[in-house]
Image (tube, helix red, strand yellow):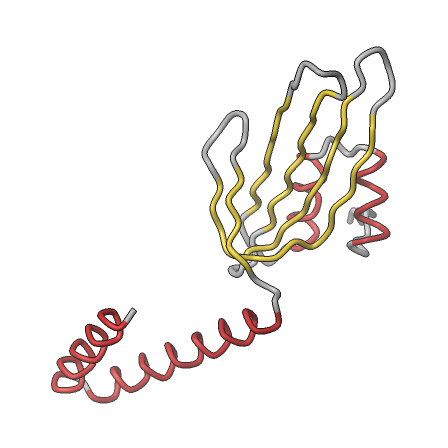
Length: 155
């Protein structure tokens, strides 16, 4: 870490000799960003997550968990299902569902839906619900734990 700070200081000195105004603005922006990161970290809101999905890329991000729920399916081979909704520092939403066989066979599958941040929060939320297949448990979690409206107004 010390090397990174020293490298930043050398870079800033060089940049100041070229363009004082732009460099000062960039350093102030970096200072503000660092303050936000420290504040979130101290509050325990953000942490580093790594999710290995069954099919697709490994997900790595800094963020927080917004809600979680679980249930057991019925039938001859019941599954333990868990649903998680995360929000990244940049504002993306990630919905993760995992299914583990309740039998001793050890079957497990993990699926994730990543929704990049946009101005349309409702579209982001609906994309997460699409990833969960609009299951009853996902709907209940969205309404009660996340306080999301699942109503779509059409003009």
